[in-house]
Amino acid sequence: MHEISLNNIQLQDFEIFLAVADYGSFTKAGEKLFVTQSWVSKRMNLLESELGLQLFIRSRNHMSLTPAGEYLRERLHFGQNYLRESIQEANRIQTGISGAIRIGILEWATNVLLSPLQDFVKENPQISVDIHCQQFQEMREDLRYGNTDLIFTLEYDNISFLKTEISSARLCEAQMMAYMNRMHPLAGRESITIRDLQSEEMLLLYDHSSSGYNEFVNRLFRQEKIRPLVSQYAASGRAHLVNLMFGRGILIASKFFLGEEYQNQICAVPIEGLQTYITAVWKKDHPNPVIPMVLQAMGR
Image (cartoon, rainbow, N blue to C red; front, top):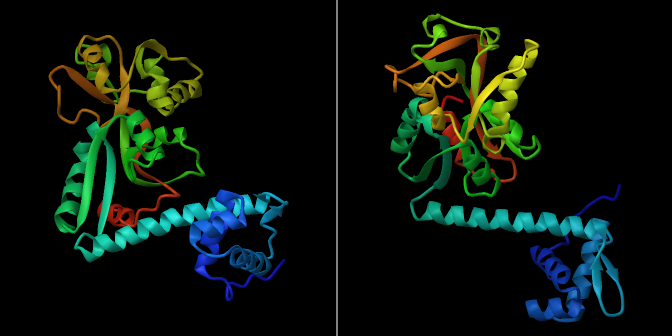
């Protein structure tokens, strides 16, 4: 393997390389950067020599990138964005704001997560914290497109992400419950099993809302060699409230789902041996430096 040395390479050489890659010409890149064509050629020859890479396919009228050059361009663009964000963060620190973070949180999760988040905001006035209550689909899309830095969700929804694109951390265990109308025959039980639900109409979510939730529920029934009888679908658990109140089905959700709301109309019965986790999720290629601070405040 070629021994790489950066001793003779200048930061400007990478800027020149990106300009040549963009314009396909030493001459045009030199004009853009206000240097001569010969200087561009000299620095690119040195860059290739020092890195041990052929970056360009040279022809009479055009310059194109080799596969190695294409890869380097992609990574350098990423590095430029990271450098830009770092400089912006340094400016925030200098002006008294040492960080900023945008957080997506499930609507019902405020019952368990809002208190430690409020404490974090109070103890870190130098950090700008923007919190949005959202549904599964909204959180996933905002995280994927960089509109959010960190989301708090349930572990089963994480299958919607590629494992290579996210990092996650479990925050706390969440007992799973069967939510039903208080007049339902199962409502008086101390606990139930999935097999107790084999003849019950179930309330699920649309796949585009949370395919992870539906897969989670279906897997529970498959393990018992039965199939759920689906009554209705909705965009969120909250959208099933009327169905629960009118006894139109049973919804499997965490113990945090309703908190103390609607207790006179809706009952939550624990499902034996069934738990999931509230998880923090963030993109691997967008490591906001405030994230570890938030996770520590949440008990991680």
